[in-house]
Length: 329
Image (cartoon, rainbow, N blue to C red; front, side):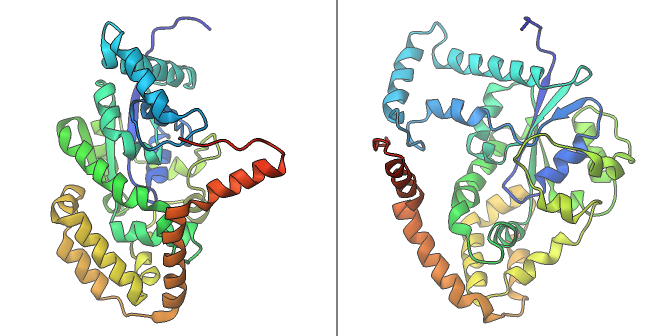
């Protein structure tokens, strides 16, 4: 490997899952100067070395956190120098993953919402896109796409609550450095919202790009395959599909409580009005067909969050392979 001077500027696309980020990524990727892959995820483990909580590992994460903290105290620039080295390392990886004519590398990793503020502080020259979507539509899409219609939000509460809170906080810390856009505006049918987005990135927009995104291939196993299979052109169909999914009285009740938790202030930052969303939710005719199933899965989900049976499953698998069991800390 040589020592090329990094010429790549990162673009970070921040959003909650099921917000249309893959669609946005694919249309941006039609530009010749933008390189991207499905989802890199590379910054999460590195930035979590500076977080005491949130990781359980065989090596003992909390001990590692304290050891790295001690190590950073001995660096000339302290913790900031450690993070600066992670930044340079990441930029070099983006460089090596980009084609010769690329000016930008688009990193779309859904759970970057957990570290969005840190990323914005580390990458002073990067471009940042905050993509919002009606939170009720996100809820419905998670249930329909990943739950096959059954209640499964307990698996994604880290996104729905912690992720949303951190995204709004990160945006409010540096609104002048970020571009905020709603999924509903991008899929409204015209090119105006897309043109504004490309202009914010300093890139020329060609309306023909909106017809070419179906041919974009994103290397990697991550990313949304559902939307790509269902839609080969921009469509407004997904905008109202959420109403059918959330027609259950129990689901409507959960969504009312969720909207109250988000609150008017955060919804306003995202570009939505609490009263309008509540009116739409209340207007859905109630259909009790999924109530019993929802109750069962909600209870199972509560137990799952407490006991985390997948950890027990992995330990049992180690026993079957005659491996020693390890504690995680």
